[in-house]
Image (cartoon, rainbow, N blue to C red):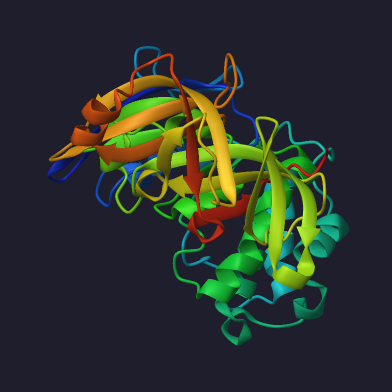
Length: 373
């Protein structure tokens, strides 16, 4: 459990953060540039001192202004990975990794129950790099070593501050695969700062949204990422839906995947995941067309649902939310953006059955870290 209520002062800027969340898997902190994401992470790590409040991790108090508790970074049992890796340039990869293990051994109360050297080396694929120095490594290789060093310090949680921001798309994609495996492989929760929504779609189970130095929302990723009222606060993330699905079939000859969402089939651009894998589908509301459920359509993707609500948006538009089945869970609701004139002319109202149709090319799909059927 992550329980925090902190105020952190920086020159010309103040962060006010209040969050209580289960700390499991990946918790993403998102928001526009300058919203306070990195400042909050530094406060969690003990690298910035709050001016008031408390911070508790899994029941242990790391900071409490009223009680006079402020554990230094080395006693917080938190691994930190920054954007640029921050490896020791005079040490080989092996000795950078072993530095993390020595930190764990030196910390009072550390045990041998955490990740082992050989396990970390194998998972991150750094065995061929062990004798090399950091300056000879690529950006993705340096980040893998930085993650390994943090893991070998046997932390209770990993804190990551935009760890993929400096990498090219190919290296980002490669490293995302490693990050997705960490919580499952080591049972280690991650607090992850990013402004890249493809990373949030792939990794996050919980999301914290920050705006202008304040936490404005927190909760399950599927629900918050489909909340139209929050999307203007997170930057380059156009209004739409995030749906939860399972890969049913791979149409390799067509580079397509068939996915079931709320018991309904859709065809999407191929997702690199096995049959039975859990995936998330991102569909922009403006790419969804509505039609009455009684009409047939030639559209390849059709999701039938019941109108939950109609929200007026800016200008000429309205957003219509469909529940894809009764008592739809997060990840089973589809948004369509239509004109207010269409809402009135077609008589769209809560309780009615409508079909949302969209092209396969309008879907962005990501496998999650869970691959069980």
